[in-house]
Length: 198
Image (cartoon, rainbow, N blue to C red; front, side):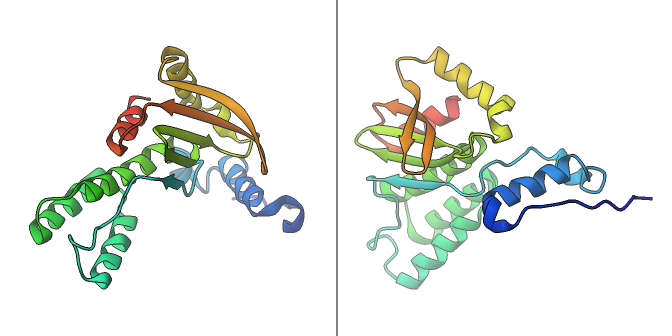
């Protein structure tokens, strides 16, 4: 039988919603790990959502899918996909319905793959512009992510690839951020390839 415990959480206005979520996750992993055993056996997800900012055209072009409502439905479907198998099925359905994929759609599908990889690597924001890819790691400097095997893997990759990428800290309006910058990224495909190599 579980003993009842009293846990003090500071008011939300003091700790903020991000810190509250992290506190809840920490309690699940430590204090209540028996109750949440199935959840804690899964790999920890440090990033919930990633933002991509790019000057590449990653979209369904009007001349490929000319009905606006159809394009919106497809964007929603694409946003709900979670696995490579689902993405492959989605791609096949697009080809069956609309014909061969234009470059913009190939890049759109690759951008979904980039998001998946980036989230797993602890990247919250990714900028793909001017032949560079700049990856912003988790803003919370105290996150367990920075002690995880994934982050160690990123550091090893950076050390063994000094000619293609560099890691540094940068002061932003939201505080100090750790950035990983890749150079000579002239396509979405190249960006995906670099992230897959990590």
